[in-house]
Image (cartoon, rainbow, N blue to C red; front, side, top):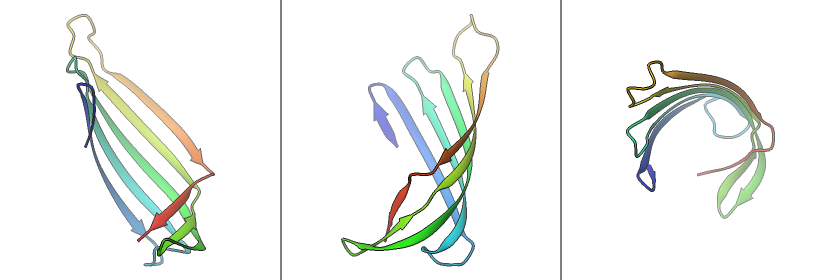
Length: 104
């Protein structure tokens, strides 16, 4: 949960590693985030992620991996306003090619 001002964001993520290991493996992830704004607008975001982790070594006793990923997200905003009758839906595709993970 993250709170900035009167906005509150709550998120939940689940990961599956195909090789049963944290390093040198492909993975898929499902992320769900719900953000409630100070004006009671609610944005729900669902993201599906696929990535690959390559072991680089150890840092501070944890595994350091290079892990580029591709993500597809859909965010739906429900407005708390009588002036806006429809929800706003945004779909995005992302490629995170410069990503490093510390895994413990």
